[in-house]
Length: 160
Image: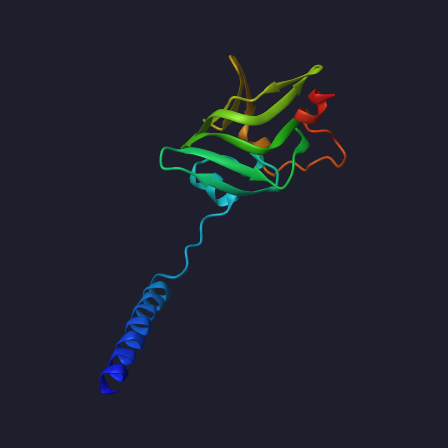
């Protein structure tokens, strides 16, 4: 009987001690609180206003590749242009630039054209539509574009 009590005590001790030390380690370091999408934009020197406020979740990999998720597709007016955002955006980010972009399009005349890169330097934001580049004053990117209610996203508009 003493042997059974001793083994029960050892089992309970083995279960309680690691839990207590894990809790102590977690509380000492605190829970991981990743940066928000706007904070991440700041860290990379990109204007927060490149994205609508519905951009809330992301995956950022060590090599700079990313996936960014919006609450839903969005069409917004920005600088006199209509910009369409898919539910998922992707590309690679580095200080002052995002390249290899997918999921963002701009309306040019009657067609939705993919935005392939964005660079920020010298007080300007340069947007690449494939080989075509257009620069805008960075001062024009002060507030996030608002999604237009009821506007069809580029994917929906082209599915017709």
